[in-house]
Length: 300
DNA sequence: CACCATGTTCCTTG
DNA sequence: CCAAGGAACATGGT
Image (cartoon, rainbow, N blue to C red; front, side, top):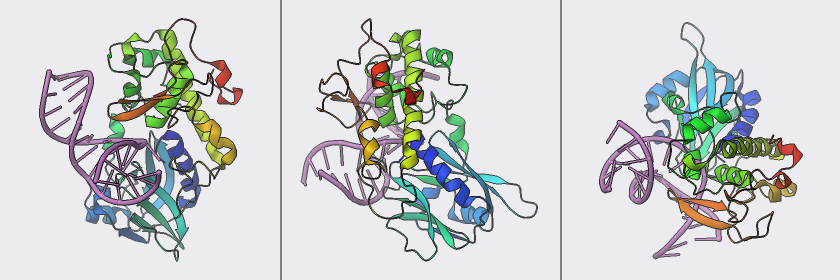
């Protein structure tokens, strides 16, 4: 479930459940998930500590904790990787397969489960230093984005995945944002005019806001079974919205929602990119497409 | 068996 | 020094 909107929704779900809860037990089943911490150091820091809040930066979850006595408050960083999940379940419930870390709380467990073990839960906060601005924050302006893109010859789609440019976009929403902005994914970043960049900034924000808003109906207290489909928790959980959510991602060969031209898939930086060859063009007269951008997306 | 997969980091090559 | 590409990480779905 790991791009900014999914992490945002996760944080909103976790915050009220964890705040003011104390950690009575720390269970580590996959030491590698704590890297670079030693299990000992991790356990020593967490055991007996109390959650004071949960936040997000990019795709990272930030847990805030305090301890009794003289030891200062501290934070730990969580990342879901490709397949990570975090949820709360009753103490007596069986732990699912591929559980990496369990924190025993008052009558319940916080479970970090990750089939591929690409995720992390650690005292090491250094990844935060490498992140660019929040895409929905005040620093993510047209001027900023234009300045950062104007000297790069890298394809725009690949640039958008760089977390030091903007924090939180992943493979799915990068494709979705470029579709909404009408920009071809292969175009070198430096070829975008200021107007293109403005359209792109708006599209990024619209796509992310829309995903967060739509996700409010998604059940987040998932604790075992398979997700409804391969894409996060989407699908049967929210059938009404499923169609609208992703307009190009994973739709190779399917008709473009706007012009019916078949969606194409290309590989860039070893990742799939999906786009509409007709709607995404830098030819004059094309830009943000208002017709595929419902008012609820707030893309202006 | 083959190929694909929402992410990040490290290594090599140019 | 930088950019770009590929592999690695580990497991499961199709």
